[in-house]
Every structure is written in C-alpha cells, then in structure tokens.
Image (cartoon, rainbow, N blue to C red):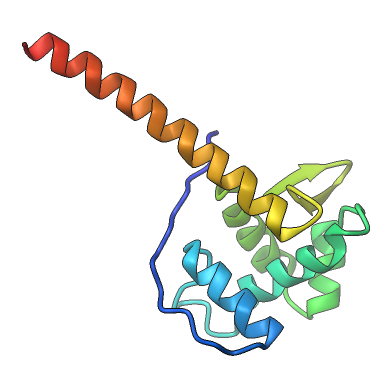
Length: 131
C-alpha cells in the first residue's frame, strides 16, 4: 500500500520546547486528531522517534508496556503511522522509517514529489485526449 500523505498548514509558534515542536510536526502531518484525547498516538510516535537513533525496532507489546497502553491501542496507532509512510515493520518490530526526523521528512517529500509527478503526467495525458 502506498503511503497516504497528509499535510496541514498550521501556524508555527516560537516555543523552543521539543514536545511542542514534535506535536506541531505530527499535527502538520495529520497524525494526531481530536479523538486522541490521551495523546496516545503522539506518545507512540515519540517513543519511535527516541528509539530510531538506536536502530532497534520495538514490538507493539514493548511500546504498550512502556506507555501503559493496551496493545490494541498501540497497534491501531502503529497502523496509522505505517499508512502515513513514517513507520515500517521490520525484524519483528516497528521502527521509524529513517534514523532521524530530518531524513524522514526528506523521504516523505520525495514520496510526495513522485506522486505529484505522476499526477502531472496523467493530467497531461487526459488533456491530450480531450483535445
């Protein structure tokens, strides 16, 4: 399945707080929503960001235990993060697609540019058929 890329333009505050910056990044990528009242998706995301540098995948059970969440809740959020193209499942665990956020955003940008190039090509073909 191809990643579903969502980008929301949000006003950036000048807060130099890593949690607020991560929250803004995740919100800008459409990862977190109002239904996530206990910020569980955010917490899963943060856990994966922090372990990405160690290149050590975590199982859903490990994440659930660390965050005191049900495995079902964790799996739900992992699925959402996988669908967004940010997380991958490898070696019996889950890990951020890249070892740092800057590379992750570069990859997502490349994905989006590829999608737009394909859209442009199809639009050109359709315009040609329409005359």
